[in-house]
Image (cartoon, rainbow, N blue to C red):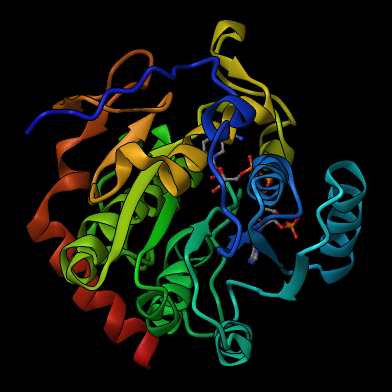
Length: 306
Ligand SMILES: NC(=O)c1ccc[n+]([C@@H]2O[C@H](COP(=O)([O-])OP(=O)(O)OC[C@H]3O[C@@H](n4cnc5c(N)ncnc54)[C@H](OP(=O)(O)O)[C@@H]3O)[C@@H](O)[C@H]2O)c1
């Protein structure tokens, strides 16, 4: 399979990637759109003419960001809706209230390296829930809206952190293993990539393509549990505009028309790797494996049906 290569790269910004693309008449949702790279993602989509809904667990934070973006861009179709990905009722409310065809769903919200083992009311480990399973439930809930758009894209924001762990199918919720914040983060981000594989496999025939990505290292609120610092060397750091560029590429570029089930970084499809690389580049084979994706899909359907 030929890897998708573009003229964009590590330093490319959202403005560069979306230049010339008109999203008038398109509707988009960005989870976690009130912080970090989510803000730049919302801004870029709105500037290109899309109607964008910021799905935020803190509605006031979402409204503040929406007002700021409206003031900067002059685009007024930016809405805010409450969504807590750790709460199945909140996900259900969001889905029930969504009535329109949906062209772009960016599953961007996330948490990283929560220090202690935490579980939802249903016993799901919190990073797995926030980063992956909540987004899985949201995507399933919005499936008909995506389908009715005729042509739609889902973007799963993963991380190079996926190289820290495959899915441990026999102990997803750390009932046996000693909890380790990075193994949990890694597992949840592997799940995001496997979601792209599994959802694309099932939904591409309906016009819904799904890809995953690593945004790179961007100093945002995400680092709150690790001392507010990036772990990588300064030459690997990106601005939020650069960090959001790959999300925007996957959501909008004509180059990605019928492309799905793949993983990108620095605005290009990543090489597969068979071991963790020193610079955390590439995508692990286990994260693109169709059998793993099917197994995770089945388990996830059971988890959200409880
Ligand atoms: N920054 C990096 O270096 C980096 C590297 C690799 C991957 N990523 C990925 O990029 C994505 C965006 O991260 P960021 O760097 O922009 O971090 P961020 O500034 O912390 O933004 C994360 C967003 O997710 C939201 N969120 C967290 N838990 C949620 C929940 N239970 N329900 C709904 N929303 C929730 C946060 O809302 P609150 O403000 O309410 O907490 C926030 O809006 C994440 O998926 C992250 O894993 C980032």
